[in-house]
Amino acid sequence: MHVAAKITLGLGGVITLLGVIFTVSGGYALDNLEDIDIEDVSVWNGEEGTYDFVNKDTLIYVRDNVRCDSFTFSMTNDSGEYPYENDECTKDGSKPAEYLDDPEGWYHVGSVNTTGEYVIEASSEVYLVTGSAIFGEILTEAGGGVLTALGGIFLVCCGILFLILGGIFALFLGTEDTSVGLVAGPGGFTTSSIPTTSINTPDKPPTTPISDTESSYWETD
Image (tube, rainbow, N blue to C red; front, side):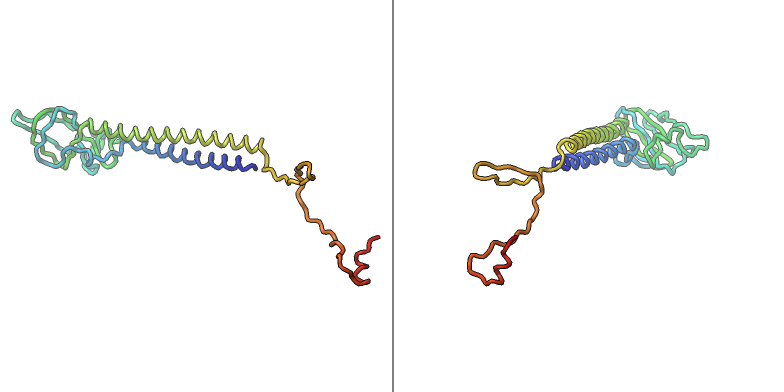
């Protein structure tokens, strides 16, 4: 196989493999968009305390070891108690009805949308997360996953192109040229593809006088 075909096929294989790895990595990132670290994006957490809401949709999360039907949450200020209600639970009451959409290890149990400072009381530790933070986290992870997957697809296409070119080179370039140059004489130079071989020929007769016994060796028919 010609050296150009070998190099092209090798590059094609490596580039294609890298493209597959990038594509799988991007797809995995897209499959795990819901695996958000609630602790990192939360704006407040605790069982009781005060928080100043700023008229944004705020999601309430608890750990997934908290039963949905026994969880309680209340918010009060000078105007009274905020009309909060938990999200619907599953039939057995162990988890929220939409728990499959929640990040791993967490339950989204309810939401509030209000402005002002409130005193919070909950039966278990809660984590308040703004809707914009969740959306931003998903958008960032989705963007990274999409770009990685697209980059992988591009590399796969390039790798396949190199493999095709390598196959063409292998078919049409043949093997490397191993021709041997032979001197034709003072007037020119010719080449031959016949492999060179070593031919044993008798040594030339010595120019110095030799004995009768030695001279018989050099006699020819």
